[in-house]
Image (cartoon, rainbow, N blue to C red):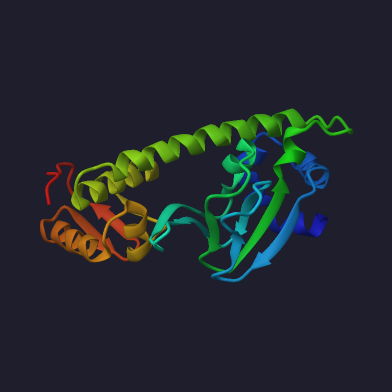
Length: 231
């Protein structure tokens, strides 16, 4: 565990679950929580729809996507989680009987799994850090709910252009810059916005031709602050 900590100390410091936890507390805390580190390949499914919602995952390396597939096989991307990010905590804290989503690796990953029950229940050792971790977890669940609300706000826009621009404006604000990188390729972005991929590509091309954005794969730059929301 000590060797592992030397490799991933910086990642765990960035993880919001461990906010305000000292380096000296981190190693015994992971043992107390029964943290389990697993390796996955690109395309592997970490959690599957129908699994029992007991664990949260922390991305130590790589990237995962949270997806939902309807009866007809249409995919909706709920979100993307990169290094230092957490997934599964909302469902586990809500004690849902089974997960309504899949969590899939979009690259080779190392994932730390932690049983939420080990966090929310007081341990016999009465560890000083335990209340802080519980507080951090509750704050994360609240923040995740706000993010889901933001997605609903984005995809409720009337047109593909409006959905795309609302999303890009949100990402620019989050990055604090006119130039930023999104976590999705074109198909994944279309799935996230709940639009047709070809229609999305058309709108990106239009916005580039109008001098409103620059776009290169996952990299975007907003060139003007005035946007006319029309198809």
